[in-house]
Image 1 (cartoon, rainbow, N blue to C red):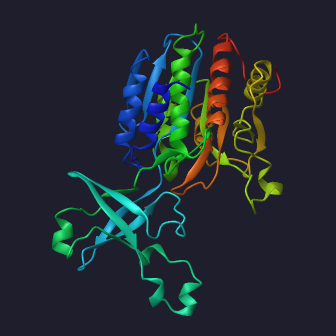
Image 2: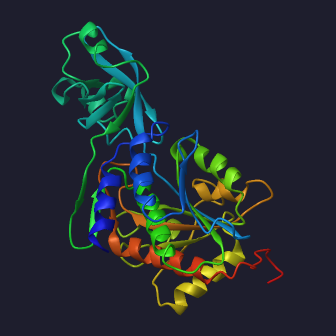
Image 3: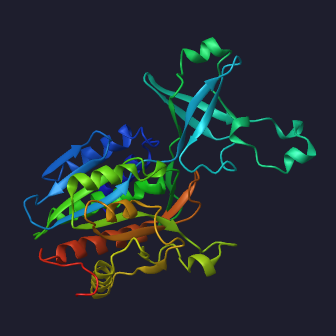
Length: 356
């Protein structure tokens, strides 16, 4: 992976984009796509799409959501402490003592998530997880009046950005889910911009996935594709106490996950796997732990008269935490699979199960 791609990866991971407030990530994504796409637009929800070969009859859409889990300010106490609600699927065990950024209209306000010190907890309280209602964000204010000069009710909150390689191949960030998917979308579009295409390709960074797959709902409706690829993260199971009997044997660095579930068109799935095998690109088959739902693929598939969809996931450790870990080899191989699959389309493919 070249230096420009790695710089884009870092910039995207270091952006803050809690669901519903994705402007910062959208700007990074939009600026990068503009250097090689025929057209780049951001819609009223905040989805950003780059387009290649618009006039082709068969339309292919790629979607990776660039929103992340976070919080929102709901109350400021007399002590100047900011109370908050979760925005997306927050693990309350992970968040005490975290550093956060409150994203105000006047800029970032730094804070820390506080709770009652362990010394002051009863024996019973020490054995129970702290509820979010019993935590607060301390921004260093003396009182409510001082805090209200800095923070407004409803301001979104993000974990302080972080990104680093822990080894040659494995990297960590609090925003891996799913900025890594949006990164893959952009890199595939860059690769395809250098290829002769028989199909139109729409590469979209979607919003509000963590609160109901909302961006994919409107974004797919607007594009009206025949084929849709959703790129997200999946559970790596190469850790202690992860139930392989329920989730499969998924390892970091052994290739992206190709899902088999009701969200995946069987004809498209066969094509993707055939391409991967022909080009000797490693991948890992996985059967979803749920029959349907949970990623943008579910909404893409159910749009208008239906879309032939395929979910590609990057194995991820510690999902929905500040220290998610992925492997760059899985990212690179997902980019290769998607690039070669889309480049192989002739434009007259049919994806109706049972007739191919």
